[in-house]
Image (cartoon, rainbow over all chains, first blue to last red; front, side):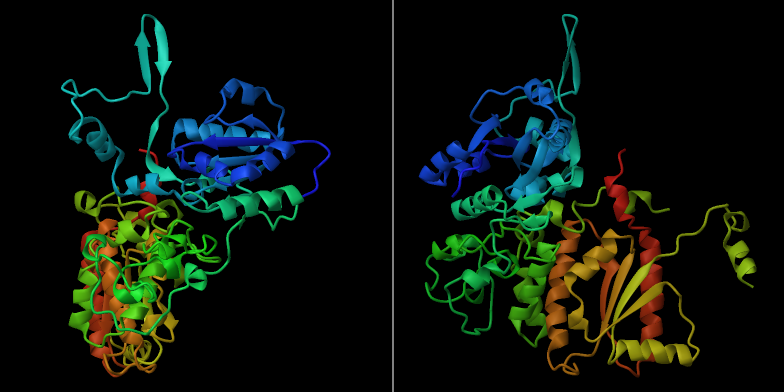
Length: 331
Length: 158
C-alpha cells in the first residue's frame, strides 16, 4: 500500500456501545502498525485521553475519517454526532449499533419509564429504597451539574446526521474492518451511503453447509439442540438461522462454529427491513399444506421480534414498540 | 358536485365539530381471485365501505411482510390481504407460504403493540362477491373501533 504524503487524521468515537467495536479495530493484528504509519489518532476516547473541548477546537473537516460506533440513545451522543459530522471529512457508522441500532435498540420494545424501572428499581442486584433516578440537572453547593437526557427511542447514526459509509457487524470481523481501511486509504470508495468492507449477497452465499430440501417439522430453541449435523443447512434442521436475510462478509463464522447466524451484518443490499425478510424466508421454507401444522410450527418461535431484529431495530420500518396506544385513546 | 362533497365533510357540518375517524386500510388483493371479486362486487353494485385502498398483486404470496410493516409505519390503520382458497392457488403453493408468513407476522406485530384485527388474511374466490363486501364492512368496523394507529406519533416529543 502506497503511503500518502501527509498522514491521515483518524477519529474513533463510541456512543451507546459496549466497547467491542473499539477492540475489534485491534483485531486486524499486526496490520494496526500499518494504520499507525498511515494515520494519526486525533480522537479515540477508549484508548487515549481526548476531551470534547479539544475536538471543538479543531477546524471544520479537520479529521479525515471518523469511525463512529454505538447507537444514539441520549442527548450527549446526539451532540457529539453533530460535532463529529462537522469536523470530519468522512463519517463512518462502524458496527451494528451505529449502522442499525444494534443490541441497545432492543430497548425500543420498552418505554423509557420501563427501562428506568428495570435498571434502577426492579433488577435483582439493585437496592434503591429512596427510588433515586438520574436527573438531567442537579444543584450541589451552588454548582450546577448536568447529565445527558435519556431518550425514549434508540436511533441509528444516520437518523441524526448524514453518514458517508456503513461498516456492519457486531463487531465487524477483521476482514471487514481491513477491507474498509484499504478502501479508504486507496481512495477507491463506492458512492456515499454504501456499506463498505462487507459483501452484497446473503450469508447463505458464503455458507459451506448444504441444503437438502428437508421439510421443517419443528423449530428448536438454543437449549434444545446439542450438536447439529455439521454438513446440513441449520435452518433445515429447525434451528433459526438469520443467514437468508443477512448481508455476507463475515465468512459465515458463527455457522462454521456450529451456531446459527444471528444477523449482525444487517439487511442484504437493497433491503431496508431485515426482520420482515426473515419472516418471508421462513414462510418459504415451511412448505406445509396444512394450516394447523403451519400454525403449530410458527408457535414454536417464542420471540420473533427479538430474534429477527436482534441488531436492526432502528433500521426497521416500525423502529419501536407502540407508545401511543389505541386502548387508552379510543373514544 | 365536488364542492358540496367537500363541504359535507368539513368539520363544521358534523355533530361535534370533529371529523369522525375513517380508517385507512390497504388491501393487497390477488389478481386471480380477490381482486376479481372486488371488481365484480363493484359492477354488481354491492354496497360496502370505501375505506380499503386496493393494490393488486399477482399472488397473495407476493405480499412481502415488509409491505405490511411499511404500510403501518406510513399511516395505514389496517391491512387486508386477499388470496385464493387453499388448494386453489394459481401458482400451486403461493397461498400456503402466505399463511406461514402472515401468522408469523401477526405474532411479531403483537410484540410491536399492533392489534391482531389490524392485519387480516382472507380467502375470497373470484365469485364470492358477497363475502368480499362482508369482509370489508366487518374489517372497517373493527378497525374503526380500535381507533387510529398513527404510527408516526410514537416518535413525536411528548
